[in-house]
Amino acid sequence: MDAVKVYGRGDTEVRALDGVSVGFPAGRFTAIMGPSGSGKSTLMHCAAGLDTLTSGSALIGDTELSTLDDRRLTLLRRERVGFVFQAFNLIPTLTVAENITLPTDLAGGARDDEWYDALIDVVGLRDRLHHRPSELSGGQQQRVAVARAFAGSPDVVFADEPTGNLDSRSGEEVLRLLGSTVRRTNRTVVMVTHDPVAAAHADEVVFLADGRLVDRMPDPTAERVLDRLKDFDPRTLGASAGGTSASGGQAGAGVRS
Ligand SMILES: Nc1ncnc2c1ncn2[C@@H]1O[C@H](COP(=O)(O)OP(=O)(O)OP(=O)(O)O)[C@@H](O)[C@H]1O
Image (cartoon, rainbow, N blue to C red):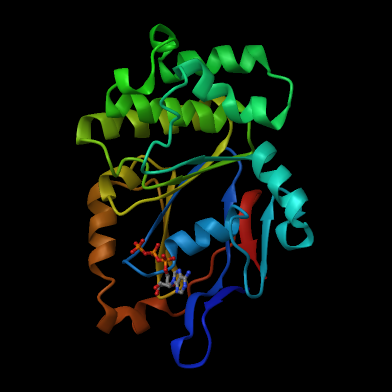
C-alpha cells in the first residue's frame, strides 16, 4: 500500500512519503501528527490535490485525483474541499459575510441559504457579519476562516496548524468549533498539528515518522498523544514502525496504493 512522494533526485532525493496508506473516514475529525519533517504537510497536500504523488493514489470520495487534469482538479478542490491555514488569509476589505461566501461566489455555484444560515450559528458570528476582519480578534478571524472552509458544503476540510497563531483559549474555541462542525454537519476534517492538546480534539490521531504511518490512536487525550510522541526518538523508530498497517474504512479522502 503505497502513497509515495519523492522530492529531488540522486543525492538530494527525499522520500517525504514512503508508502503511506491511510483513509480519513467521512464524518470524522482526524489529526495528523509526527516529528518535524515526517511528511505531515506532504500527506495533506497530496490528499487535498494541492500536490501530486510520485506513486500510489489519492482519492477524495471515489475520485482518483491523478486521473484529473488541472482544470478538473481545480474544480474538485473548489467544490469538494475546504482549507483552513495557520494564517487566516481573510480579505481585509471584505466583510465577514463576504469573506465567508467568496469562494462559493467565485465558483459560481448557487448558495445554499439554509446551510449558510446554520453555519453562521455554528461558528457564532451572526453579530459580526458586517465587520471587517481587522475589527475581530484572532480567534474570531479563524472562526470566519472555518466558516469559509465549510461554506461550499465540501466533502472534506483540511486544516494546517489552524491554531498556530492563536492563544490557547481562542485555539480551544476554534478546535471545539471544528469538532462540533464535523458532528453537526457530518463533514470530514483532517488537521495537521504539532500540539497534543489540539490533537486531543480529534476523533483519531494518525502518527507519521520518516514518511511512514507508524500508529493511530482513536479517542486521543493530550497526555496519551504526548506520551506517544516521546516514543518517536529516531533511535527507537525502527522497532516501533514495524508491522503497523492502517487503511480507513469508508473514506472521505485518503491515499493508498
Ligand atoms: N518542495 C520540497 N522540495 C524538497 N523537499 C521537500 C519539499 N517539501 C518537503 N520536503 C521534504 O520532505 C520531508 C517532509 O516534509 P513535510 O513538510 O511534509 O514534513 P512535516 O512533517 O510537515 O514537517 P513540519 O512539521 O516541520 O512542518 C522533509 O524532509 C522536507 O525537507
